[in-house]
Length: 327
Image (cartoon, rainbow, N blue to C red; front, side, top):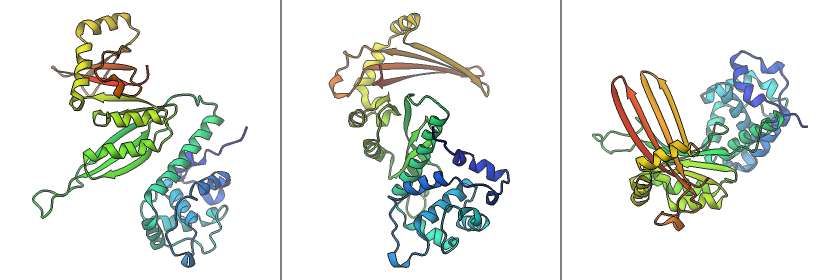
């Protein structure tokens, strides 16, 4: 069985512990794979005026970032400090690039291409590690779609021109603990077509995609099913009829029946920070009563969540509905 170098995962901790890389053996095969992943990244510089190959610049920045470098000056100093070590797997015919070179080159690189290369490399390393450690690779992969707003990034309304806070859509691989895609969006509603575009380019076989009510769209679900994936989507007022149907189905009496049977019922509770919270989950595979069932691709079940939490003597209750393709 082929051996896999775990260097990439341990690298940051080793640097923080003061390990001198110049005295260690570099992971040549791992770095060669990384360089292969970088081949699709387009070099936008003039062909006759290139002193530093693109892959050398990206590799130095990638390793320096793992080592805690946060500025272009830091990356230049990192390169000089470990130049001897870098030369063990990079030619560096013209030495270490200056900080201005790092800045200019990364200003030209297409972020989508660089993102695909680095995320693809990290996912490849994790897959190889699972093989070496004989971990179960048949587990279902959990993909999360989530939009975030960065507070304090906008411009206040009392200035000359109002600017909204930065909106970003993230696609997370929760099983591996990495962010696969990040896309800036103009406003919250633009999250829907961006998510559809990204999901349509992904291989979702063996994956469950979860998302909030905003992304519970018939087209989004159809795309996920076309990519061989399953889904779990929240329901709210944006699908008033479907949400109402689920609420009408999960009456108190029916929830009690499900709870007594115990097959499609789950309960969890936790306590922290003076707060106690209890969640109850009820599921049904009876979906033939949905009004427009044929328009929801692969819909096989629906569920309701009852959440009850208390802080000191105050008590709150909440109920949420979900539509799912896994039975």
